[in-house]
Length: 365
Image 1 (tube, rainbow, N blue to C red):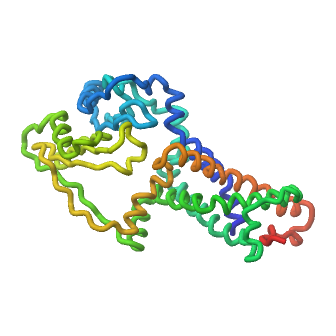
Image 2: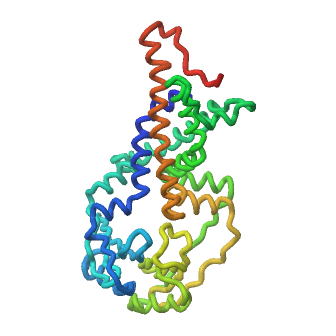
C-alpha cells in the first residue's frame, strides 16, 4: 500500500510541497515583485478611519470589507474591496492612508497560491487536494509501520550509515527523513483535508469532541444612518484603551455588527491568534454583548489551530524556517521513493520474468 500510493501520488506531493514551502514566504515574494505597493513610510500610523475613507473614495462602486493594520511582515495597510465578481486586494500607505495600488489578479505569487490551493482547477482542484491529503496521511501511517526497525535497533532508524552502498543510503535516508518529519507532515495532511472539506471535517471533530458554536451579536436596524466610521472606532477604543487596532471589519448586512479587533503589540504580529474583538451596533454605536464563553473543548482547540498549524504564521521567522525546511521533506520522500521503486521493481521486471520480482524489503538487517 505504501509503495503504490506513494508511486501514484509522488509527483503531486512534490508539486504541492514545493509550492507550499515557497508560500511560507509569500509576503516577502510579494514585496520583492511589487516593491511600489509595500512602501515603509516613516511617521505615525494613519487613523484607520482615514484609510477606510481613502479606499472608499478610490473604489466608490465597490463594497469595502475592512482593513488590516501594518504587521511585522507588511509595512502597509491592507484592504479588501469587492466590485461585482471581482475581488481586490489593496495596499494603502501606512502614514497618509493613500491607496498605493492593488495586487494584480495574475502574478507569480497568485499563480503559486492557485496551484497550491486548487491545482489551477478551482473547486475541482480543491477536492483533489483533499484526496491528496488522505493519501499523504495514509503514507505517514504506513511509513511508520515500515520504518520500525525493532526494539533493539530503533535508534538506528533515525540515522544514516553513509558507508553503505548508494541504494542502501537512499533507503535509510528515505526512512530517516520520513520519521523526523512524520508528525508535521501528518498535520499538513489533516489540515489539507480540512481546507477541502471544512463542513465534513468540523462534523467529525464535533463527533470526537463538541465544537462550541458561537453566534456573532447582531445590530438592530433603525432605519436611519448610523455613526461615522471614525465615531464607531473611537467608541471601540474606550473598551480597549491600552491596545492597538489590528483590524476593522465593516458590516456586510444590516444585521451585522461593526467590528474593531485589538492587539497588545504594534506592529501587529502575523496570525491574529491574540486579537480581541469589540462588537458595536452599526446604527447606534452601542457595544453589543458577546454570548457567554464556555470552557474551551478539545474540539474548539483543534478548529482554532488547524489553519495556523498548516501555514505556520503563529511564531515568527523561526517557525517559518522550520515549516519551510520540513515542507520540502515530501520532495525528498517522493523522489527517493520513486528511485527505490524503479531500482527494486521496474529494473528487475525489465530484466527478467515479473514472477521473480518482489516488492522492496521493509526490514532492516
